[in-house]
Length: 207
Image (cartoon, rainbow, N blue to C red):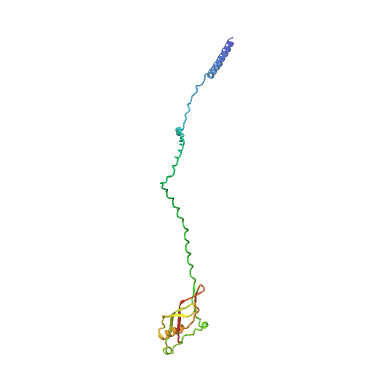
């Protein structure tokens, strides 16, 4: 009998212990845990807003259209008075002077044609050489005479001048006397025969 009570009491104790554990578990589940609220922070740069552009000014008002002046009536010309016998007529305007055509400029003269000097070929024209003076031979006189002669268009000799003397008068005179009888082929210019001053050397040599 005593053992039954003891087992009953122990059973009740076990049941009460389980009930307490169960109650504690239920209480722990039913109580909500406190929630920690974290305030978010925003880190960044402060950007200034662009200033708003002012609206453009309104356009200027158009000027009022100009009023065209009304055309004035043209007055009628007064009636012409009959010409008076004493009226003086205005002189008629002189006609403008007639411009004369400019005279053409004279053409520049063409350059003169080249001159072909005269020639004196002794063999062709039979011009004899001067005779050596005998006294000049004995005195051993020798030299060259340069004569300036005017050869005419017909080939004859006109004037004679001694340009350079040989140094001996006898030789100079002999050269002048001989050349005065010579004939030349006259100088020509453009195919025309002309008078021409010509230098003629005459040499006296004893060698």
